[in-house]
Image (cartoon, rainbow, N blue to C red):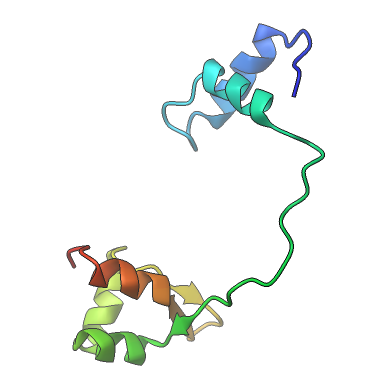
Amino acid sequence: MKLKNLPATNIAIATTALAEACPGITGEIIIAALRSYEPNVKPVEGKREPLRMLSVKQFGERFQISRGKVFELIKTGKVRRILLGKRTARIPESEANRLFHGEVI
């Protein structure tokens, strides 16, 4: 994308607004991102792999740990979970793969 006369104050405002969510963001990074943006490029369409999910029980069985230990890992942020309701949680299989391939619990 070609940038035309982008005022420095706009870049400063954007940098300040993004600073909390993106530590280390600079005006140069924002300008580079804007230059690489291509507005007419459409997202790739096609068949996507479904997100495979494990129940807490399945996750525990896979790692031979108790349900309590699974909930402890979730509570401490070591395992990500997706809530499907008030009491129903699923763990993406990618989390199990991440832990299986070297992440220390």
